[in-house]
Length: 161
Image (cartoon, rainbow, N blue to C red; front, side, top):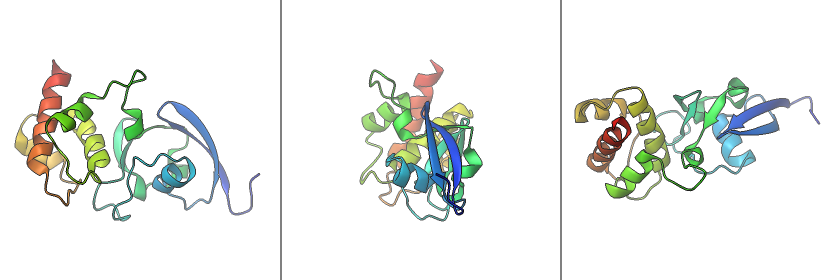
């Protein structure tokens, strides 16, 4: 039941429909993690500076910490959990991250992968310099950047072939 301080919203996340009652100020990140138990998307800085909360909305990368849940009502949201195929097959970027050892602590990895998928889809994986530029919004405190670039390069070649 809607209270005076909440609004009903309908979200389509990873192909599944969800109906929620949220306060208008609830971010997409908090709705995903706290209300829907989709904890793959990480809360890093909560200020749009680190990229740990990167998800896709209608195929575009979005920082979930800066996006209100109500803003994405009726749009298609993909989180890191939605990249794996129904049979468990990893997305090419996920597989490349494993093969290239493109993570250490792993906290930034979901956001890095979501940005990498978009980077490739947007056609910005033509060179290491271009990959670095278009992945610059995602920070890695462990410094795994050379491996991240290698993983994006590998996945881009696999997706193109």
